[in-house]
Each structure stands twice: as structure tokens, then as C-alpha cells.
Length: 509
Image (cartoon, rainbow, N blue to C red; front, side, top):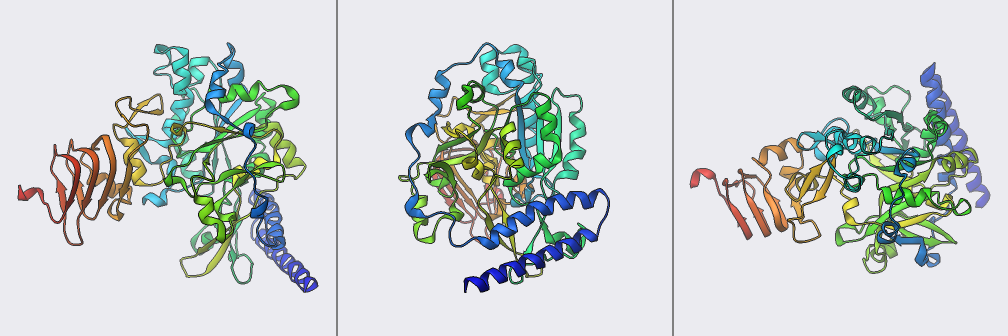
């Protein structure tokens, strides 16, 4: 049996190689060179995918991480900041993962170009955090550090690097022209483009490298774990190392809490040589809303990221429990550049494969092989988790999240959102907007102005509902318009611990 399986594996591998060569022959010049590099990474992933026998972890071998491997943020904060903050900052590069489209919010084009606050997009806020010339002169340095706008305050040159995908590259580059006079140098590189494979034959579904028509459906960006290879292959990494850059701070562009934290940076830079920490993952306490987030475990003597996709079915409930796995990965990561270069050159990045099944428009079942950036934690020396405040994890994945960040729960200063001091609870309200609000355009049309939510605990809105100007929501508010009904909440209304259902038109008043 083993012999037969090995034969099948070799046959699949050589068929795949033949198909990839055919695809390369369908183009020439620099496109061919870029695709050739991409395919090297894909081949490696595909070979490992064929070799995988059973789950990548044995549940019984999972241990809790040792006490000192996940440090409380307060301890890092307690060390204070050196006088030479600028020296630390000049070793840093901010990298934002910018490969995603705004499809989950009904938008076409890069998600980073959606307006999230006062007409500012995710990208605008990111640039302001690193640069912001408006406020830096009128605040003391500690406050400036907390707010994140760096280059002006400390007279440094922290560059911004965007990892685009073939989906977002063109639109992002057009927009970047508007930042040419800003005090932040922006670089981009593209993550790889991998072929989707037919679930049955395990061969590429696309017959050409073209990105037009049906052929475009045959390609995908292979998850953010691809950052190591594509950053290295782009030549930009070597350029930054030559400029004296030592660390990157990586985060998702839609996480509005992921600003540069000087205390974490100082902790990284100040480790003694033999103990140099090469990788920090920011984790935060799990709530019931975060049960699917990856967590840190100790496995075979190393810190390791455990994602829900790797958990055997029998243990999924255990994985989701808030009592056993108390923290989850925010995907805010601090990583040593020379260490990435070393691991890439040694071909020592061994990231778990995430098998993502998809159905194409024509009904064809395909498989995408992906990896996650945080999974590399086990490859780096002296890796560490830091348990950070929840305020550093503020992702905007849906219009429900968008409502929170647009509201008076937060104030905006120099590109950073901070929870309003007038909010009496440390947690944000639980907001669930129904399918009539999924699309950003429709969502905008349904709110004449964003309601006052300072005293809100829970909001559920479902059906054809609109809210007038200056509405105030407190406690638990549930508004449900049944099919065929419509509810208009009049301007100036104050709803406290209310359930509104049925049919309520403004004309009725």
C-alpha cells in the first residue's frame, strides 16, 4: 500500500510540474520570471501537501506555554522608554497586509480604500499614524508615543511597506500618488500568485497565466504566510537591511488598533545579544466573540500557533473554550529582518498548510493551499508572546464593526482611535446588523447620522430599518422589521432597553 501511495504521489508531482511548465510557456519576459519564482514556492507547498499524513499536531502532546513565554504588557510597560527612542525607531519598518478586497462589505477593490472615519480610509489612517504633521508639535512626547504618529515627533524615517496582492496592487498604487508629499516613504511588493487546483485531479484549473475572463478565477494569493518568501524575493528586504533596518512590525491593514508601540519595540531592541528575541506575537484575552482565533501552545519544546483548522473535530469545543485557551493571536507581529533572511536562505520556514476548499462560479470544486504568517513563530529563536490590551485589536471585518469605529465610542487623533473616556465600561457593545446592512453603501443610506452609543451594551437590527439623525441607544436595543414591514426610527429618538418590532413609518407620527 505504502509503495502504491508513493507511486501515486510521484505521479501527481510530475503531472503538476508538467502543467506548471505549460503555464510558464504561455508568457514571456518579466512576467515569466515573476511566475517562475511564485511557482517555486507553490511546488514546495504542493509537495508538502501530498506528503501530509494525518493531522499536523497530536492533541495529547499539546502543553500550556511556560509562564515567561507569554509576558503581560504591564511588565513591558514597566521598563519605561530610553532617551534614544529615535534610535529604536530608525531600526523599524511598518508592514501592512494589504491583499484583501472589501467583498465581505459589498465593495469592489482593495479593502484598505474603504472610508472608516471622517472620510479617512484604512490607508489614510495608517499613513497619519506613522507621519502625522498636524498634532505632533502640540503634544508632549509621551502622548505622541501613545498616539503613534512617529516620524514628525521623533524626527525619524520609519517607512511603510504594503504587501499587496494581484487583486489590490493596481488600485493601491494609483492612490499612493496622493501621499507623495507626506513625511513617510511608502514601498509596495506583491505577494505570490498561486494556481487553484481541481479538487479531484489535483491539477491547476487555469490553462493560461492571463488574469482576464475565466482564467482569472484560476488564481489566488496564498494567505499572509507568503510574506516571508515574497518580501525576500522582491529584493526590498535586502534594500531595507542595507539601510540599517532590523525589525518589521506586521499587522492587518483593517486592524485599527495596530499602531507602533514604542515599549514593545524597545523591549525587542534592548535584549542582550545571546538572547536576541526574533519574533513577538501580540496576543490578547479571549472573549466569547473570539472563539475561532488562533492561540499559542507549547509543542515539542517550542512556542507554536494553533489554528482552529488544525484542531481534530473531537477537540473543537475544547479549543473554543475560554477557560482552557485564554488568549488568541491578534496578528500584530514584530519580526527580525536578518532572521527572516537567514530562514529563507536555509529554506527553514516550515509553515503548516491550510487547505481552503472553494467553489468557483461555474460550480467547480477547487482547493487553495495557504499558510499563516503567525505559524512561523516556531522557526525563530527566543520567540515571545505579549498579552496586550484589547485596544490593540480593533479589526473592521463587517459593517457591524464599522458602526462601532464610526461612533462616539472612539475619538480619532493622529490616525489612532482611542476609546472615549466617557464610556463607563471597558468593553465595546455587541452589535449585530442584519443582511440589509451588509453592503457599505446600503449601510450608509440607513443611518442619517451615527447614533450615540456611549451607554449601549447590545444592539441587534434586522430587516428594512432606517435610523434618523441624533438617535441615542442605551442598554440593550433590538429593532426587528419583519418581511414586508419597514421601521423608521425618528430623528432625536432615545431608545433604552427597548425592543421595537412591526411596522413603524415616520409618516405615521
